[in-house]
Amino acid sequence: MIPYLHLGPITLPTFGLMVAIGLIAAAYILQADFDRRSIHADAFTMITIAGISGIVGAKLYHVLESPAELFANPSAMIFTRSGFAWFGGFLGGFGAMVLLARAARLPMFQFLDACSPAACFGYGIGRIGCLLSGDGDYGKPTSLPWAMSFPNGMVPTTERVHPAPLYEFLIWCAIGVFLWFLAARWMRNPAWNGRIFALYLALTGVARFLVEIIRINPRSFLGMSNAQVASVLSVIASVILFAWLAKHPQPAVAPAPVPSRRGRK
Picture 1 (cartoon, one colour):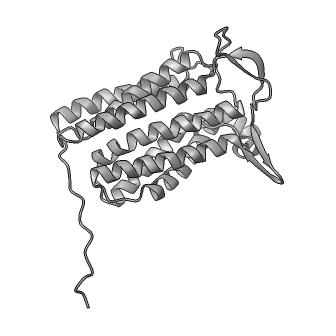
Picture 2: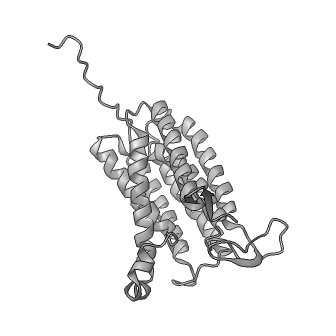
């Protein structure tokens, strides 16, 4: 594996590089979705702010998962290049996007629907960074022909294991493609606003729960890892949202036109 790229005097962590590529890809996809929905917003600015918020959230969540280690050696826990929790990143990025949408007075459910495919691709591409860096997100030992070892990874192993980040890349990109094309049909009916986001919560929750079965993360609540608990909550939120939307259809809200300066003195 290649945890770092050395370009002369510059050292680039491959994890950070792939996260940046994932954010750029997500911004392009989100802008395309905004355009086809006639939502007037700058996806690149939003993704930049949400990306920073997500990275901070991922680090904070990881740090708070191990309070004893935090108090024993806070600098090592906070200022290391590793240690980012998926659910913390989701909360940080999602919270930032919701606040930005409210500040811009965008139709919330249309906005969340537009964000869903972009979030899938951004997350999937970011996971390639975990694969390249060998940061311990791999799975259990296996004899499958595509098993991989990470002898030079940040969390090295010479055993052949499930390349879990690669699984996540493929699954999340497949979900992103599915949601993109399904949205093209559902967005014709304004009463279906919000359902793409609800489906995103369900599909990604199920996918992450299943991937965690072959991951090496420690189990905590009812024999589940923290990510599996978050996945269950995501699916429950999806069911609740689907039920709520069935009783409260969300019509499209046309964005307010930008006032023209023509004719003004």
